[in-house]
Length: 208
Length: 166
Image 1 (cartoon, rainbow over the protein chains, first blue to last red):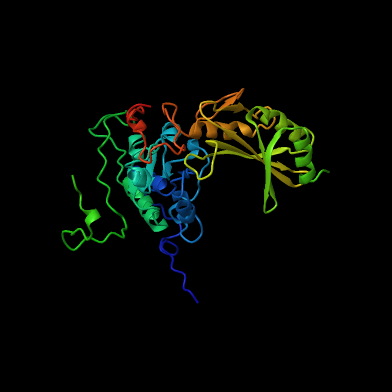
Image 2: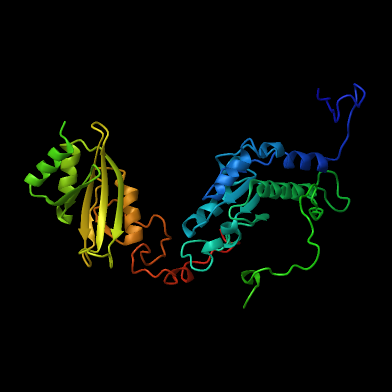
């Protein structure tokens, strides 16, 4: 039989009160309910759907509620090739999203044009030319784990957000906002390389 | 309910058909460009082809044995009798114009725009003949066989999208 492992049940007296900071509470709420916009443009969308389905289950991170309208979404996962025709629509949808909003560029095409970079006559060379991108997820297409990693990086970014003000201005009077902290990975699958990397094959060397 | 063979026979009697062929049960009817709209209307009204599945085009440039440059393909379907028929229209430069079938089937609207966008074939009396896939500033038709594989550098003339402007 599996023993229940309570993380908070049975640890506090019955009439306990917990105090926390506004910043922590708001950031916790924001990072735990990042609602992405349904925004599949090409084959990367298949991996995005896979990340949202039961095996990888983006709902574990509170980001499984794909909204069909930008007005209810916090996160735009640009999954797929952005054409010039689509670029103006991408920006329009981005502007329709309420703040705070985040963008993940998913896949090689959105990161920098991908296979269409050199001769493609119809593909925008990176969606960061159209909207500001928070996290780049490379791959063609990226595995769902990679997208989840990108999502966790967004959560780190939200966690590092400061909402307080500087100075000692009167209570609830608007002042200068405290600068955000640098995002730190709260859990990571990143393994540091043991030393300077050598290009294994010729095409990995940057020429010209 | 007329069979496909009877329909083809009726079309041939009226003198609209240039050639017909059958391959694995699919029948193809070639008509002249100026007779396309009347034939399509007859197929819709008289023989009940109430659905236009697809409009597409083939560029036969340097194709072995081909005499015409462009071949339009109209795929028709009858939801009542479950029959299919393919209409072919061949076009040559410089006369790349054919009647639009939007008055008969609304579904022709975007498909004809796509053919116009990628092959440069104009459809007379089309209600809204604009580019559908490529940006408006594009100048050529990239699915033509004489379009270079590496493009003509159109993207260098497209308006640059910058992050700041909206």
